[in-house]
Image (cartoon, rainbow, N blue to C red):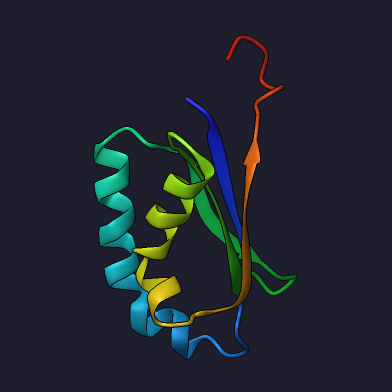
Length: 96
């Protein structure tokens, strides 16, 4: 199944992320339980503050991936200043 990455940068300040983090993690847990997440985690700055997200999911199509990401509370509640969803394909590690 194709892979799609969400690459996002947060709005300034951690309060938006912190307020929506429990709902975001619940959403991610459902995707994980369905076997769709290949990678998910925050982007961090030099101080280790969360400043964005990188998530890679399996989806049938780009439209399906965009619809899935649109259900994420971080997207719904405008935690991200900007984000994009792009198709990606694994090269490393070898054997995938």
